[in-house]
Image (cartoon, rainbow, N blue to C red; front, side):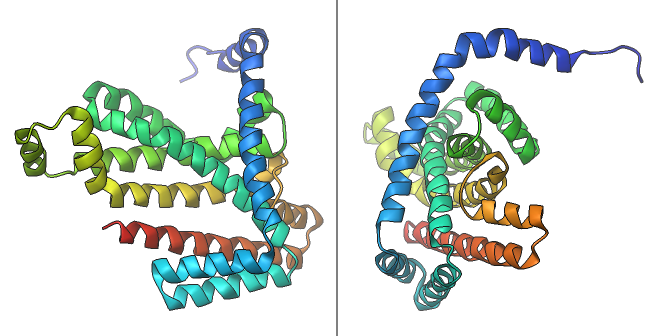
Length: 277
């Protein structure tokens, strides 16, 4: 099937070298600056709060959302993270996850609403989401490093791109699943489009939107660990060091920290979603 040659690699490199970086470079620097500010706020807060107080907050949140068993599990998990001296790394990972999730929600939910409201928008957005979700996660790191360099900010950007599709898809799905009878009743009472969205569709779709946020957080955590390859601090860097040193024990210690953090975040956000029903 090698009937002709497509120099896609050369075209891409020329586009980046002669247009993207010279023309749009200042825009990327501004984006990097503002994302860095968001990340610093999260990281400074999470590392400033004493471990005991942060543990108490998370355990109480787990108890309120999912009950006593999850609260006990959360306490054990956080106790483990502190006892293996990975608290700072866990908070750095959590800061990257929260920053990326914040951006994903900020951008993903409006796009999900747009996708639900407009068929043309849905036809444009859906293939883009398919592309974003099927692209191997490591591929996200290449343009991120090229445009933003290495460090925690590019990690947040790569994580944001990787984790946004669930927020868009499930917001759109939740609004589309609002019963037509409810829509007709709201129209009969003279609701405007804005009132329909804010007072009818979004409240009914809230459990589905929360499920999307849960998935966004889980994907953010997965990508935040992978992004240690481009200099992201946190638990992923511990695992990466273990791989480069062939240190099985260090890998197990870091890996268990990631597992505990992932399960705690999953259960708490899942519980928050159920409370919206």
